[in-house]
Image (cartoon, rainbow, N blue to C red; front, side, top):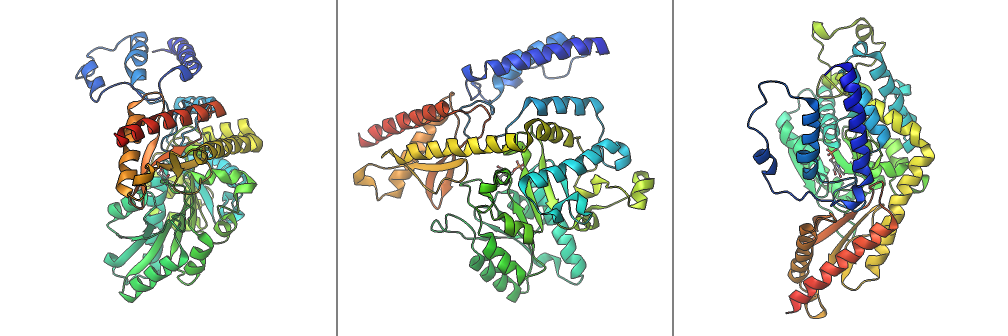
Length: 487
Ligand code: PLP
């Protein structure tokens, strides 16, 4: 493809994308295809001779688009949102056109310098203390691929910090702490690094938040057994129910265990901090005072196209001491002089995408007020959903709605209300019938043995009417499951 062919194909691609978005709402949310559908349609190997791009673009439309789940659809309520914006798409296009893996400052000074600036913009947007800003020169922010990478990077850095402080420690006794509600990213980091993963219990009475007393008991027990606690992954907004760990209690305990790194995984809920009214709920003051690292995904609830997970650390040296390997071929004048950031030393890989560009486009285009109204809209729509659930006798909230997430289950009929298994089989039946539909998508979870359904709001095009429609669908499926149950 030459430059003029690219110009033409590019205009056509944008036209197709616009058509796709114009028709988004008329489409099904869920792809109506069976496993293996695409392998059956594609040849087993790449073509011998290059093909005309028009044919390729047509086949994208004909073969690939039908197999896409529409995360931007207003009736997408599954997982967590991956809000995406036209500004983000355009930035990705520009970034792809520059195509430079800016691992060192010198590889493309603009990539590093923009990331340094926008991580600070993002920190200020969320109200993060200046200790975490790149401006501070001691802390700083870096864009990782995902929150799971951020957990892994924090764990690698925490392990390295611990080993430097305790060179004689038996490495097989290092322990990472998570709660039963922590995202599986914690268990995965433990698996990858060969660490003991201690899972701390939480209760429904505490709305599934980790308590300081539980942490203290585990730390004391493990220390007494000669183990080495070195990191806790605490969560602000768990995946399952949006629980917020009790950070004031947790940091009080952590004070007594100074070698414990406390990473705050706020992959989804962290974005709610753009609105001052959510900061107390998410314990921002405590995060600012005491967290060792903090992560939130702008690619979830932050209007920025996947991928864009921002990790902030209080001490950048913790990252560079753990991750800086500099063979001769990676050395540079400014890197050697220490006058620039070489972001390769702040993450696991070497090459990295130019992700700061989309965050810059989005932050400028929406501004603080645009971000705030988007987050407030999601929270208000979830309030609407929760009030509809409260008004029904067929379904009930399992936990307090958290920001833009509600978790509910089906109420069994009166004579079976004491039976968890009756509740669970009814909720499973409703979830199965919702999953069989293509016009809505939700995900399931399990809360202390109770089967539940999650309802996560946040797709940019979701309006009140979509919430009402979703509730009507859920109710219709619930009533029909109850009818079958009674037969
Ligand atoms: N942490 C929490 C609280 C999450 O909800 C999720 C995903 O939903 C993750 C981590 C993992 O996110 P990622 O896909 O960016 O690794």
